[in-house]
Amino acid sequence: VSIHVWWGPVVEDVVQRLGSFSSSTMREHPRGMSFVHIVTASARLPDAEARGALVALSKRFENATGPTAVVIGGEGFFAGALRAAVTGLWLAAPKTMPMRMCGNTDEVAAWLPARHLESTGVVIDGGELSKVVREANIKID
Image (tube, one colour):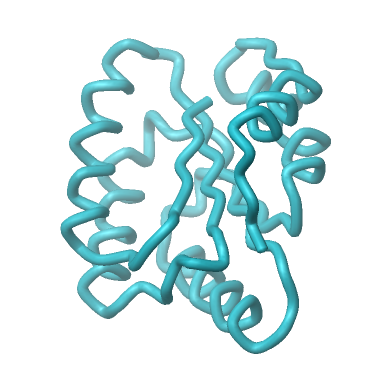
């Protein structure tokens, strides 16, 4: 499971770096990988170039990507706009990847382990996943 925290603007350069990282990491995990994207309150909506790069990235790694969870906490206009942007990206992404939008990391811990096992044959512990995020002190809102 690869955990990505989006602290700042989602721009094409950042997406390209994510692609380079994913390419090298996925070679080490031939059964596939699952992803957790945590979008913090300091992140910004992706611009058009970044959205295009994210869709291209999802298509590029379609066969090696397991379930993907996106955590967007908070309420109000900004959180709603981020959720809408992610929904738009999912509509353009390959349908072979199970995806879920979550309001907190506990939702990820409840959803991801069973799907990861189905996709990769590898067992992960939801409690450990939550612990890793808590110990990193990641605040989503």
